[in-house]
Length: 353
Image (cartoon, one colour):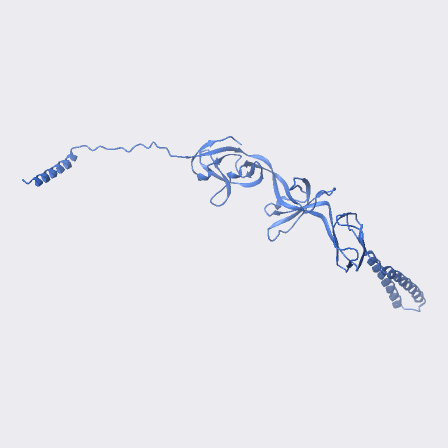
């Protein structure tokens, strides 16, 4: 037999024997390996935070305004004869600031007095004639009207004379003076600006979500940028909101007897409106959920991640106060950015706050 054919026959016989051997060998069932590998959990650092009772305050940024401010304008025409007060000078009520030339004003008043005397004599004469039936009641009424007109003209001239002396309408500081000696003034021209800072008005705008907590007569703490503080009282609350910001103007008031605080300074106004339960946390712990809500991530009793929305409060050098959380919470302090709500984690406790 050819050598190659012999090897082919041997290979076929060997294949048949291997296939037939499967009938006589018991199959061995292989059990799956038991799953001894535990689910891997993310480790996070946690800290127990307990709520504290703090004063609830509304904080608004504003500025100080003068208690009163007025711009004096000329009420009669004339040339400035003399200057009697300088810028920055403290004025008392009624103190003269400057004087206009009187010119012929006094002469006109003397003439008006003579006219009054003449009208009075005429009225007296007509009255006697009316009693005798020699004059009509109409003539008597006209005489009375003429006398009244002469008296009114004298009064007008006297007021015009008084208007030549420009006086401070209230106690205050001469902030601006717009004229000098020799200046000619027409009626309505600017003369001076006077401000009263014996009291000051802290002014701010409160948002519509907080305006309900501010009331007239309520005390407000005022803090200036240089650290000075004052206690003021709310005097005015706007009844309509600013159309652009939807916020309400409020005005408070406090005494400034030594004039040590200037108007126009920036100020922080704090309104105490009760108390609340809040947690003091680091701003770094704040996160956003999928809806854009601000909150913190914590771990519950089942070691699952929970997201709690919060309301932000006051901030200081130690952190920020937030409300809306349970009285006690295990907040995630590290690793919160790597875990999802509902995920089970391995909490690693840190010192309690």
